[in-house]
Length: 148
Length: 344
Image (cartoon, rainbow over all chains, first blue to last red):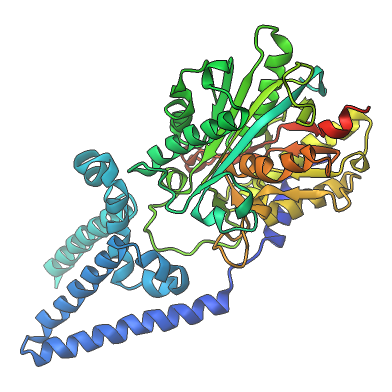
């Protein structure tokens, strides 16, 4: 067969169907915005219940994580995310789903080698490098602070 | 082996069965399958065990259709997508039949049929062989991609691993107790591993199309035949993306399939209803469609001769992460209708 790998890869790229960008952006905006509006609603609710602004803010994050975890557990989150895309991925909801979904998935391999070992299979890189960079910036801040 | 293997004694597929999951049963071929489980569980509590159960179920269905027990089977060729092919070995492989485990990714059905036909031609003592291949969407997603409940969007080129299985019982066509109307395997061609250079695990059709093109070009140049000699040229699971690429590659090399081409991955699902994007895939995809759609058409004489090219993307996630590519493979078998074949 007359087959030129480079030309073939160019052709694959050229003809492959693209993700519907405008539609995806629209739904991401709609769902992402909706989640933020819901967060704002929760914040107002917690503030009116007498919580301090800092505590109320933390509680909003905790509430969104909790709801994402529940929706992932009952198998609804992925159906929403299929339409919402970045709308559910970018807020803290996406991170909660990235931790809970492997946990749900791997419970068939047991609590230690399944859930325990694989819970961070998706979120692991974010956790590791976020923690590392946090420590690194802390050191930089401390060093800069010595000379100021 | 570079040339066509022509079987001195054609081999009949004297019984076969297909079993599928819920989404496949709702597809355009839904009514044609012998069995389906809308829950995809097949009575088991984990997805991996569900595929084992599917593997046993589909072989049992074929045995029931033939009115035989597994004790009559001399050799069993079986494969799936799970690591160590465990759905096959713990599934139909545990039924006490001499067993050969196969891995050809989604091409396993073609590989199995070819090997079974070879075995039946090579050994007089082997009179009955079985081929079983399965795939399970949830088990495959867990192993190759992301957790099932992970919320992500799939790209339009990605394919959907079918929850499906096919079982085929084979014997030499000239044996007295084989129905003369059964479809026959008269020849085959072993595929060559072809490196398309594709690294995108969400575009398997593109990774497999060059292997399918290579097999077809080799076949037609060696057979001294043209696509016009076949009523159907059926590929396993190239999907819409891979099918278009296959036809382009063939045209460039001077081969026009002229409307004879069909793809099991495209046929299995309704693209508008199911969220399958470029089509179905998996060892069970081509096996179930072959059993439910094409073999009955051969048995009725509606299709006289056809080529079945199972397509496999030999994808290893760790190999990909180490910079490897997705290798393609495409074994071919020539299937002929017993209805017409007898007159020739």
